[in-house]
Image (tube, rainbow, N blue to C red):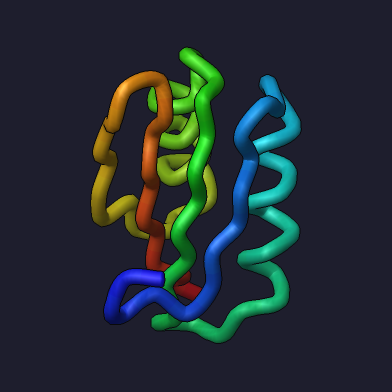
Length: 78
């Protein structure tokens, strides 16, 4: 896990809405200020994560892409 990441979930091979549901469930178990990293190869995941972060109020810190895989870093806000 990269420095500063409290939890990591692997959603490779999973498609909408499963990665967002996994992120939501993981965030529910975390404390405000903690950081989650999620890896996904769903082509829709960048738009899904941006929409989810806007609706949920959590802070989407990073979106990186390596090949077909996306890496998202999200800070729990509340």
